[in-house]
Image 1 (spheres, helix red, strand yellow):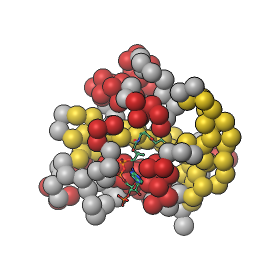
Image 2 (spheres, helix red, strand yellow):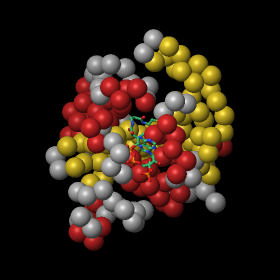
Image 3 (cartoon, rainbow, N blue to C red):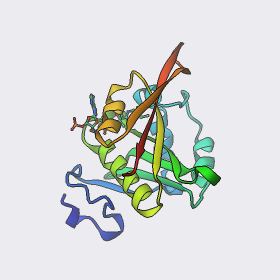
Length: 182
Ligand SMILES: CC(C)(COP(=O)(O)OP(=O)(O)OC[C@H]1O[C@@H](n2cnc3c(N)ncnc32)[C@H](O)[C@@H]1OP(=O)(O)O)[C@@H](O)C(=O)NCCC(=O)NCCS
């Protein structure tokens, strides 16, 4: 599918040149809760994030229902299947120029350019529509695919957070990464 074939309400704001065939990115909606709960329970998704096994639907529903002008939450679909989720939240007060970002792609759909498309949209919205100067995130230091994706789109490693989280029986380091708008 070409960008010009996508209905206007779903047209990518980043005007990404390569867009995975059939991918539709749109704002998160209440009917995404089941797909998001499945996504969060997948092994690779859990490995790369702070999610616990057996996520509860009602917890996902509670988060989805929290809307704020400082929060952007996107989902990616291929046909009827929810294949990705990504978002950021702007900090308050004197950190209002910065936002914290998180994302993940369905285990069975990695390596197809979906993560890059989702991140490209977030960067465009943050920098060119919400005037966010600093996008920041944490990523497990051994999550090579994610670190490379972030570096490819202009994020830099700023430091190592030691024993940042507990994962599968062991503590794991994380990198603090950020992208500063030029
Ligand atoms: C990390 C993640 C978001 C990447 O998304 P993706 O859709 O698989 O990545 P893409 O296909 O868009 O790849 C974009 C770039 O990421 C990097 N990348 C992706 N997979 C990679 C891999 N297996 N090894 C090395 N680099 C990889 C590459 O730079 C790639 O660009 P290239 O194809 O030009 O080399 C996805 O694998 C994921 O959600 N993992 C589980 C949850 C998670 O770790 N979330 C991040 C939390 S911080």
